Amino acid sequence: MDSVKDLGSLIQLAQGGSAQATLAKATRLLQTARRMLGVVPRGKFSEARAGIPPDFAELGNWLAHPEHTPGTSSIEDANHLVADDDCLPPVEARPCDCFFVVDSCYTPEIALAFWGDDAARRWNVPLGCKECKESLQRVNAKVVEQMRLRTAAAASCFNRTCRVYAPVYRQAHVLAYYHMPAVTRLAEEGPSKTRGPPRGSSDKKPVEASQAFDLAYGDVRRAFLQFVDDPRNADRPFVLVGHSQGTVHLARLLQEEVETHPARLKRFVHAYLTGSAVPMNLFSRTLHRIRPSMSSFDTCSVSSWRTASRTHPDLAKLRGYFYYAGEGWRSIEGATFLANNPITWSSEHGGTASEPHDYRGAQWPLPTNLDPRDHEGILPSGVGLRFGHLVMRSQDVLGAQISSLVDVDCGPLRAKIGRQGLLRVTPFKADCLFNLTERDYLLYHDLDFALFHHNLQENVARRVQAWRPTSRL
Image (cartoon, rainbow, N blue to C red; front, side, top):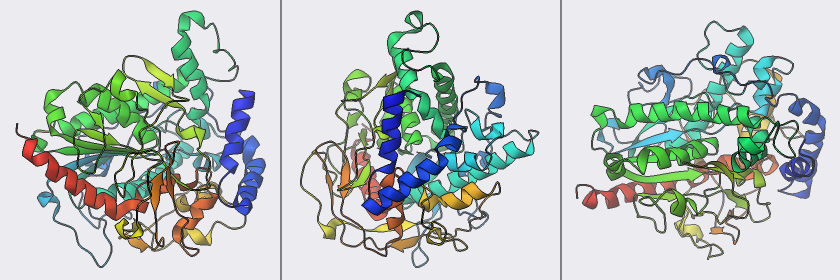
């Protein structure tokens, strides 16, 4: 291990929440640390072992797509997800499109169910390998189910104004991030100065990790081109929405496929990039037409946030590395980060908190046949809302049934941007479903969108309306 930094990262995963939650997480980490290291991808990267590139002309390779028929999937398409007492405009009547990229779902919890099998430590989830061994097919099924759960939670925040397009993709194993310090050192030092592993990284695989993220990005890029260049979508405005690994790929996509394409730029409304830090110097190094958001209605702009309680640490894992077009991966330690309050849309670090009456409320895709509160127990899984314990215990899918969203009462919520750029929110009510995340390794990470469901529905409508007067100039 890269000793001090790796140990520090593990300690950070155990921090946050109450003292009791921190102790429970630390105990779980001690129990699983050896097995966790056993599912870090370390072998040679091979595109042949990464499944088959998804064909995005096929509806089956989209987690959400406006042509999906409602009521035909066990987890309802995000285009049609709404609370039971509510209704949505018809898909064809929505004035904007949303291209959504889901976060990491090839997680340690899924990998641990296959511990000892090479299915647990592939660099990328090997989608589409119909003739591969059964364990790989099971991994694929479990990852895709998690992708659908996460898409339901996040992309549904935009379905009142937008038709939602969300591709499956051969995303990188989340523990590929273990190698990112070496990836950035290799990029900064250059291969000519680095014989063997980069300085201080004897067990790291920088070339392989970089290839894994490139492959995942390649799938996202192809899906975007299928979406944005579809003649049926010509002249329609679009927003980009990503979370965590999805944000990593969309930030690169903005630089390579939007900024330098005037016709696409004209249609581009806004990018909501959450769960992974976006450095402000992006807007001086590679983005010049696309700007950081400073209000609730600016367009051709980017907003970003990482949600935490007032007592949570600023997790380094979510602000360590960034891809700059033409440069590659770079460390962004010490950088200033874009931060927006999704209630007030202020971007002022250390500014004033929002008022409770401005908070519109949260929604969540709670399965009708499963409740995460029934399965967490004394020691946390680390990803409570993702049914971490159930996922770790079985190689089978959860079989989650989701047909609608439920309201989540979080109490009188306030939010403000802290001086270091984290979005700090007040504690949830004691009986709130979202309290499960107090014992997650990344704390409120999984709530970045769903916590602000109704504020986001309002905001995307406002930005699309603001885009319209200038869209034909």
